[in-house]
Length: 108
Image 1 (cartoon, helix red, strand yellow):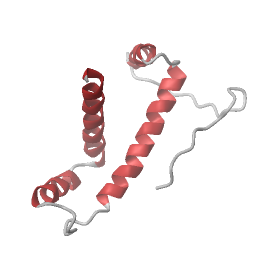
Image 2 (tube, one colour):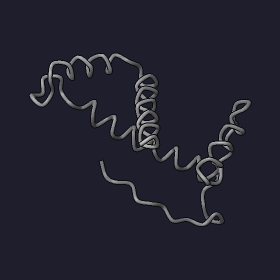
Image 3 (tube, rainbow, N blue to C red):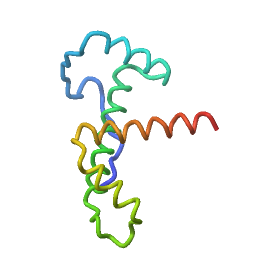
């Protein structure tokens, strides 16, 4: 996977896209953005970029073969069970792990 470069753009020239949010999501995004000292737009872009990076990394991880000598028996079993999850469940699990890592890093 090629590394993503930080996009430099002007709000005048940037692509615009209207998104319909479910009830309450706008407020949740606003709160998280305030906590991260970002605009709502910057928060949404940062999260989309992270999601795309994770999806790319997830694809690379999934390409690992179960018979790879690099994997222990437990890792093979975990990878096999992970592959049985739907794509949505896989992304949710990866996000949960990432979120747990962030909490642990903030606590230390």
